Length: 464
Image (cartoon, rainbow, N blue to C red; front, side, top):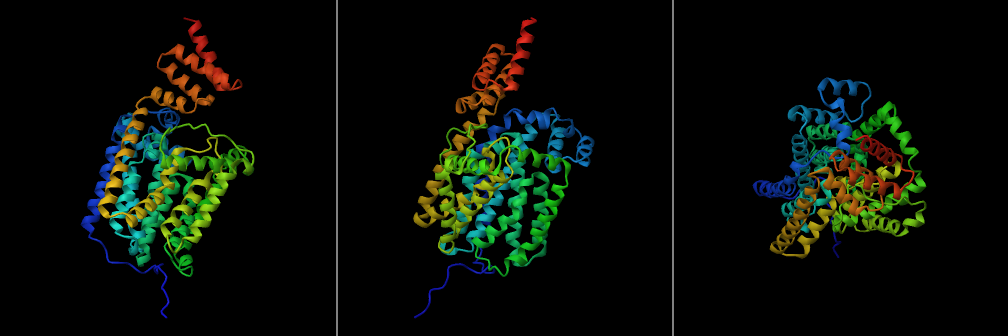
């Protein structure tokens, strides 16, 4: 009796290529959809952190200032260089910044298309790789959960890092064909991602997930991955000896200990996943609790543990699900568990964590629906998501609109009302600003910033 052969192909097994012109046409469709969904965000204003890192930051207002800051220990030099170039090109107007963010998103979309196509060419039994890649990229391009990374200018740190990160993975996948230039390109893009945001240190773990999901034999994986692990170690040591980053680590240690970080991130990551499938109530400053014990997040812990077990169990039957589950575990949970921030989590994190989820959706649609029906479902979803994205972008049109919207979704968070009061005061709406500050203090009586803002507002108005 003949044995059934494994469905996991060898890393050197490549099905015949699809028509490249068709692939380019499908990619163009996804890019056009992404542009249409996010185009109205180009008129957005500077918001919140934009003022600290761009508008009021002299270090990004000239190349000489940028170089002085970088040479004296400034973090994220490539990110700040893009801010400087945008500032010089536009004279400080936000349009150039928004154009850059949108371009970075479209390049990231092209990377998602390339990764989905490369992955599915290994599994021709799952269906048309080009169509699956197009559906994956289309959903990624228009999803409103990415608006914080794209329309919010300061979200560029995650967006641009993701673009380089995914680009490095694209060239890593191509380097399987033995082309040295692809491996060097992957290493170079990894460095650029690190110069944009330190979270890119997770890239070697992404390679582990990619190789295991694609069925790369373990005897080959170390030979392909070792340059990236070596570079990761060098970059990690450089960060540890960097005075600016060391101060961030110390602040992180005092934010939340591991016993609090784990359940807190389990809870917030589950909430972000929920928004991926039901993108209602998007919020730039969500009011998520800090949990003190793992028992407080037991359902979420069981969900992620079950996902990890499912990823192992389905590796041969549904490797795309393995890729999605393990990618989420690494990119959604790990960063903020070990390096907690003042903000528990942000929607912008999903821009580098969710693309394999869209790949899974595309594959399963292709397996169970006829091509015409699959296209109909994906286009309908893209239109709906694009409409939500368009509406979400409008809230970024002014600072007041954004913080009023945030206050509706986080009505019990004092910081939200303090920020709302500040932008109202800047707009001359003093009575409304006073009410916002008072509400912030009612929610948190010891909130020093709101108290100081209210005192200054009362002092200014009493003198008139």
